[in-house]
Length: 333
Image 1: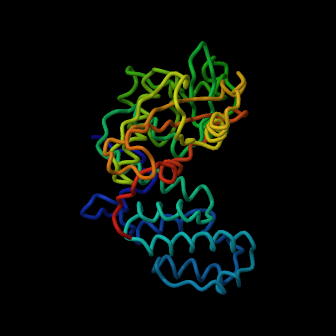
Image 2: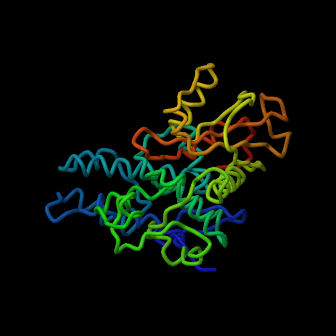
């Protein structure tokens, strides 16, 4: 099987006996090579010394006072975040356990750090996956998407990729804000075999129209995410619309999905404008009834995915880890 998402650095991590990720010195050095932490030519001696010290030993203890002594305010902020993340990773046996603790304890870190951890965890749990639609759907967990309705088809394209490129004359590329020469395609059976080669370019659009393959693939990724991190088997079924159902428990897969769920819970009428923002609806059923807590064992959970008024979709996969009424069966930290 061809590798994918090479740029996330998964090959620098180890795995424990349960298949979960263990952080290595080589992996931490990726962060030290980022432009936010690489000292510029005019950096003060404190910043340059700390960077050199951690390149030699990424686990070397760092005192808060040492960071506070840096001359540049932005450098101080970046280093504080880096050391918080590093020390948090050191306090947990696996990267998965560290991520769970981050989201449950609401540790304050830049979203970029959380997105990177999500990508690594997904790369691990999807290792060996031969379904390009599942891999492209998984990208929604850690990369914001620009959504466009075109000829009754709802297309998602990588937001960063769009923002980095200008207008085009191709109808599809123009619609998504991309240039002709980039060769932007919508993922299909015809080009799916090329996904692995271009997986780090994030330049394939995904069809998220209801009842089509992209939405179904997203439901499978949700189920595998829950199983890997919470140890609970669930079945996730994509729905066309949420009508005539008892919305007794729901999880918003993003902030706007949560708001729509809250409105429905409170008996509010969802107007057509807000309804048009809904991207996907899913019904989640817990297979292991003994894992359900504080709810009827046969109760179904509804998942709501929605884009914002700016037509940008920002999935919050952590909501699945904090919002489901199930016991958590993850490895000890």
